[in-house]
Length: 176
Image (cartoon, rainbow, N blue to C red; front, side, top):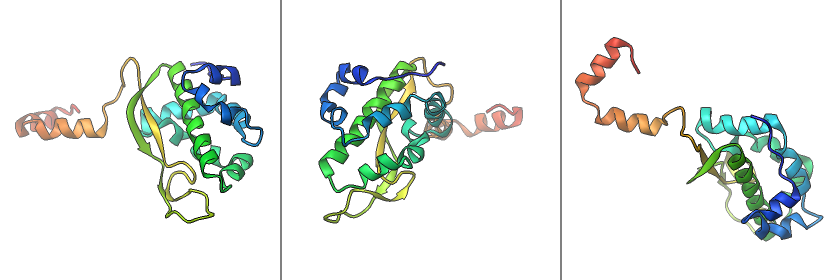
């Protein structure tokens, strides 16, 4: 699939994106860098693979690379709770726009990206464990045409309700 490019105008024309005009128009926030970062075809492929093959949110496929961008890391390290939160939320909106343009839809579920550290004054919100340092959760997506693989949860539920004789026949025939 060809890469998707979201411009500032596209973002501000979006029903949800327009509510983040403060982030887009703040010259101290590295939002143009975020737009450029997510316009990369390889990153978009990794976002899709994160859902398809790793059963994780699209952001999980690129979050470490995103957080390693010096300007983004520096901004999120600042003790500006509201601005940092809005910035992270705007990133989530951008991810949604890209995923929808690539044929995906929101599931209404969130996936974990980290374990939030205890809150301390004069310290920016960050994680002590997990995949990401600054992002705690991210939206999950599914292909509009349906997913090619069943989740482990779905397979487990089917396995639990399947009769033991059926499981034995499947095992002998080699069918999964």
